[in-house]
Amino acid sequence: MAVPLLLSSVAAGLISTSVMVFFLYLPLVWRGNYYDVLGALGSAITRRIDAQARFLGALIYFGGGIFVALFYGWVVLALMQGNNVVPQMVVFRGLPTEINLFYPILGAAIGLGHGILVAFFVVIIVIEHHPLEQYRARFILVISQLISHIAFGITVMFFQSQFLQLLT
Image (cartoon, rainbow, N blue to C red):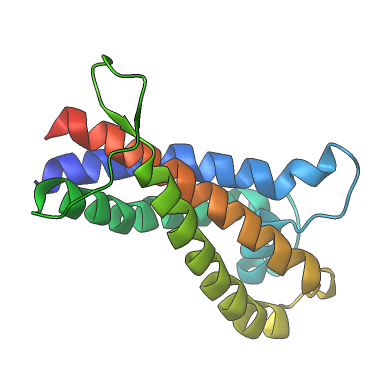
């Protein structure tokens, strides 16, 4: 079971983190306020903001997304293989894999909790001690983290449920 979980977590983690980054930078479309998470992560290490810092931030962010997807996948795998009664909210019957909306809904709930925890720790650890002043804005960071983590949870649980059906 380790190999299917690892494979599905890499794929679902990359897809879900991409969706998360999309939501983080979506305000750029309407020239709204956004928090440059990739720049903030990279510049916390390099102490400067440039393309290299953003690239380093992206590597860290996507690596973290894959790591967290492993835990979401473990939840999906436990629900699929255990004697748990999972609500059947199946849509589009007759497809090669069962699309059960229970998993994305559960992902939204877990993503909300995950977003609250991340926002709390980021405000305490990163913002208070970030070497660059421009990355110390709190409100936009908290809101963007909550929205993007809910999107991550929905996406990762959907894809984990699909990939694990195919791989197990």
